[in-house]
Image (cartoon, rainbow, N blue to C red; front, side, top):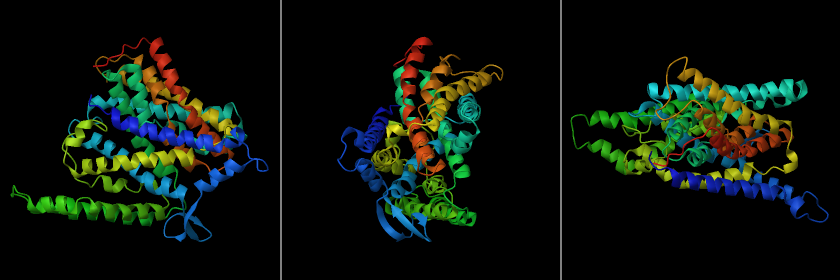
Length: 428
């Protein structure tokens, strides 16, 4: 397996740093109370999160007939589009390229396991909400059903590497599952969590931008260069224009998503699929990809450092919940991840491997699916993101965020499960 350790470590550490900073800041009223104002630190945190950058702006939250650009909107709705673009790039390559991890029969069992890893958490979340906590709680939390479906691709890889060892086939299985989970999560966000009243006609702007940039700057240069080994037009576009046309198209597509009512953080997805790409995949965030000269990989590597910084601010602006916010939604999200995810992955993975005879990767046992399910139960980044769009700001949203944060407990559970299931680490 190609090394992905450095990028994912940096990605994770900055995100963790932002998250810890937010938690400390939001709970400073308990740690270091200010006389005369028992909510001083919490108020300063929320003032920071909702800091107005530009009132009556062309982009931002719609309020009283005009848009306001806040720091929270800038990070969650504008800049997080870059994070989802990188995730979409990996999904796209896994689907279409030679040796892509989601192509052919080898992807069948992981895809079944992914489905189980989504249906299991949903069933546990909604089932417990209704039958354990009652109809009143169910009504309050039902819109958060998608929160426990997420798998944090970076943290799950890091924990999987610790539990299985870098050379174990279960680590690649886990990455395939996480990629497919990301793809499903993007679809869920687009369909079930619009950011406002839907105006689907504005998606024509996104579609038009994608078609135009593909035809003019991808297909047409290659068409005009047919039979010419020097490929002068394609070379001019690649060296002189570089990614500028795709930047312009991305801005147009993002704006179309924003005005259409779909979540604007997904606004770059139509453009990702139009960018010239390599002819084979080397694996998610692979170090080997830095040697590729295709524009899609160049853009990804140019975005990695900015995205690491963006994720720091994402953690800082979204994880600042008070520990007293723990509530019913906390336990529902946590149960969906810790219980529903492993059970779903085991059940659907077993069904694919045994009754359907799709098999397991060589060197991987059915019992390993239990451990994979525990590792995949770390929701964090995407779970946190879905919590912010599933609920309005308030006690339920804060409680759901705590559930996403507590999903780190899955790391400890995974290590224990690895011991119980007698996982043989492979560090080759």
